[in-house]
Amino acid sequence: MKKWVWIIAGLVIAAVVAGYVYRDLLVLTAFQAYVKPSTAFAETTPPEAPDYKNPDHWAALPGREDAADFTPQGISDAQASAEVDVFFVHPTTYLSSAGWNAPMGDVPSGNWVDNAVMPGQASVFNGKARVYAPRYRQAQISAFFALEGEGNDALELAYTDIAAAFDYYLAEYNNGRPFIIAGHSQGALLTRWLLERRISGTPLREHLVAAYPVGWPMSADELRETMPDIPICRSTAQTGCLVTWNTIGDGYRALQPTQGLVCVNPLTWDTDDSQAGFTDNLGALSIASRAVIAGVADARCEDGMLHVSEIRTDVYDKLPNMGKGNHHLLDYALFWSNIRENVGERVDAFKSQTAMN
Image 1 (cartoon, rainbow, N blue to C red):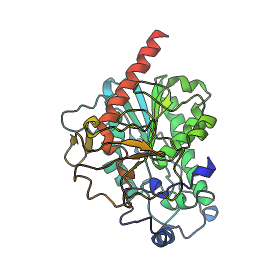
Image 2: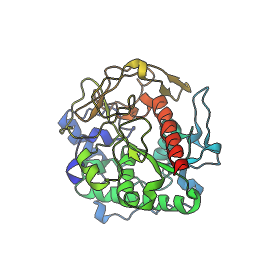
Image 3: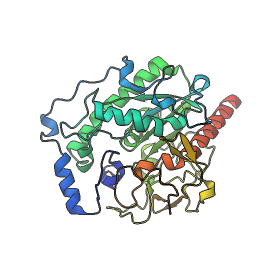
Image 4: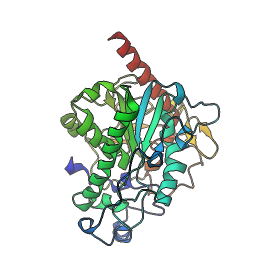
């Protein structure tokens, strides 16, 4: 996996990165210097670890009101009756140069999780699954510019929290229920590690409905090697499989080759290069207006990336600029209704298969 982790830094940068034009290497260098913590990772004391007995250390838990309960108008939150769980890991929201990992209770990064990530991403699962989303000592944004060294150390620290949260979820909440594993950006990388280290090749694999680690570059060859029993999804109702994509548009410039990366088209749920049109898009999500807007984007997989030719709405115009053609922040939002429908299809298929066994 290590040979791929340097691919496309823009794919892993959080929503708070405003005005960053990564195609200009001089700007990239300046940005790296600006956000890098002043102390080396090895010389820092890690923030205090979360305690997952504490509800405050979860961004989402069933049975209480939180931002993952969000639904657009006319759509219902069905967690109370759901027979499946989702373990969702949020993306990077910590930009401060104060340290390599976010302390628990950090207000700015927590606000991004609560006001944008939970309603904009985790909510897509609440029609068919109970949402569990841990807070964790996420790696600071500089980690993604040092993935072969101390950046990886920061990510491994973040992973220890995700593994601990998953263990607590299994022990206290799961009760043998089927589950979905999902995340975005840093959360996608950490859920990939969770799949490889804790689920693949174990009895837990039989409880996996599907995995949605979206927005992190993943080599198809490496996935086949590291988790051969969790294939890449190729159809709408396939179960026990994985889907991921990285969304770009015209003008996007990759810093490294993208051929060989996994791209599952969220409008067709296949990996081929067929074009899905605007009419195939059931609805993109607008949190502000609590609405889904149909026909906003088309999609086609090409050279490992998900290309959209146009975004036919202005509701995302005020989002942070991540560079021309970089739609990383919209990986979930542009296809929200299609993802929500697909979660239902995979859950229903899993339940049918289980009933027959």
